[in-house]
Image (cartoon, rainbow, N blue to C red; front, side, top):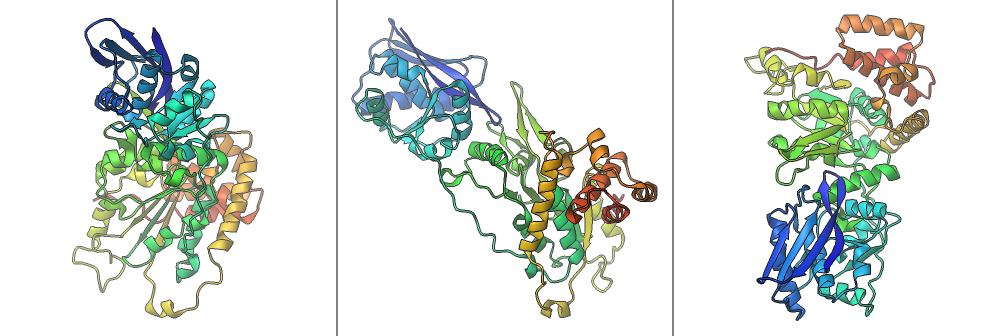
Length: 505
């Protein structure tokens, strides 16, 4: 008799259904797992045998074969332990066949039969819901998986609980979604003295998800401004929250099984590797750019990142997705994020201050910022200079306008964009608009068109730079509540292309 149950294998954020087949046949005693399992999945047979022995369930002196179908799909991880144990128990006629065949299970078994938490419960619940099955998972994963509607999620502490459930002794309760309280950022724009132009650029970036580069001397407030960007962003929409949570589930970053509405803010160190930033490594896990999906990726000291890391950002920034290529698979992860970067004007950081600049000025500035290639620099919609703040300005009163007022304007601008792009599901903000759609929604008036043409000629804008100025102008008009992009909106948008132009060493 061949017993069946179901589990999942992960391909990026997608969970593909896997049929677990178990056959107990005459022959020399052996326990084999086939179907392209990795080391962790194939070692699961030892954990299954120990867990069953802890429950005083003896395996027959026969040949046990477990097949993970389809066999061409790589199976990675220890979450195959529980479905293998279920299929084996059905084959031994300890559990009823019908219930197991209507269940998608995942969970790692300890040697004493306890169920250990695993990654990816949320994508697994999505796959189970699409297949019309219930999901069986460890107790620690139940609150996370229960966020998926239309899927009955059963969470158990041990294999013994699972057996009692399927034999109608003690039914498992249905898991409830986890609740996570919102985080209080505790950082307000009122804390920043001066830097009005940088604050304005931060507001525009938040409103339209435009990439922003800040260039300034050490201590001028670049990191301080960046830390206050999360307080300006609107909360995640329900579909955005689910998208982001699925990626974080694969990375094990969901706290207490709750789905947060705050947008992610990732700030990797400049020593991070290509795999850490873009994704890859063992199991082709998502990188920082995918963990920042629908949020912010902050790269402090941008020129200090290895050139290879910086160049790998060019395509994901443009397309909104990254493909991690492997010999046997190509894994796609979404990565639509706001790229926020900060850089010193030169290695010593005091290029604009003659009393502090090094003997190599001004060549040190061209050499330092020259580490950022022209194509990558061209992808920044906004480039703003952050000058040092005078000591006398630090004693000035706090700014009258704080993060709450700016966040309200950002939310209103985002609401206009949501209504504008309601018929375009792949476009959420102005930064996503392109081609004919961009020309339709961001077409300036006659005066603005003439100004944009002159600015393009004077600044030597590329076609990409031209369209990015259009997108920024549309966002500035949204912040002003204007239906039409006018000359002042174009002028302000073009002014943010003046700082940090590509330089050669």
